[in-house]
Structures are given as C-alpha cells and as structure tokens.
Amino acid sequence: AQLSINMIQEEVAKFYHIQVKDLKGKKRVKAIVVPRQIAMYLAREMTENSLPKIGAEFGGKDHTTVIHAHEKISQLMKTDSSIQQEIAEIKNLLLG
Picture 1 (cartoon, rainbow, N blue to C red):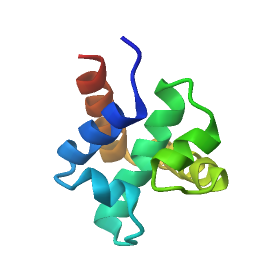
Picture 2 (cartoon, helix red, strand yellow; picture 1 turned 180 degrees about the horizontal axis):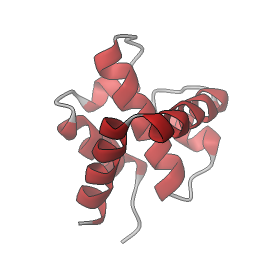
Picture 3 (cartoon, helix red, strand yellow; picture 1 turned 180 degrees about the vertical axis):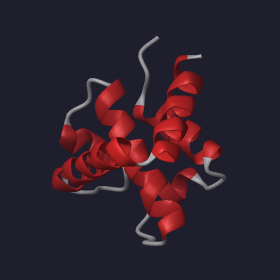
Picture 4 (cartoon, one colour; picture 1 turned 45 degrees about the vertical axis):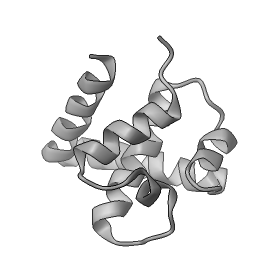
C-alpha cells in the first residue's frame, strides 16, 4: 500500500495531539511547527511525491519550505534523541 501525504499528516497529528488543519495552517507555535516539519520530512522520505506537491498538501506552502523542513529535521535527528524516537515511532505506526 502506497503511503499518502494525508496518511502521514493524520498519523503525525494524532501522535502530537493536534489537528491535521494545524499541520496545513499558518500557526507558528512550536507545538505545531515541529510536528509540521516532521510531517513534511516524512512525506519527503516515505512518499514519491514532488516537493511542490508536498508543499501544496500542507496548505499551499512553497517547495523551499519543504526543503527547509527536511534539512531542519535531518539536523535535529543527528542531535536530539527524543526526535529520533518520535520519528521512529511514527514510522512504525505508518508501516504498521
């Protein structure tokens, strides 16, 4: 079964106890920004979608936003063990 961006958004939203509409929205609070970036990161890692398509599915964000999110999370993954664990858990849920 091919993972969709929407499936990733739903799993990430559930995991962080926020709404999918928050992931697609413009709010800049940390409780939403980090999960949003994680969802973009996973969309890029786990689906074949183009960057513009991923951006569009996150409320029409620019593809550069997706690149930035991916870089940011890649960096965090190197240094932050809690982020590593959270992403591993979300991946397991998605691949379940």
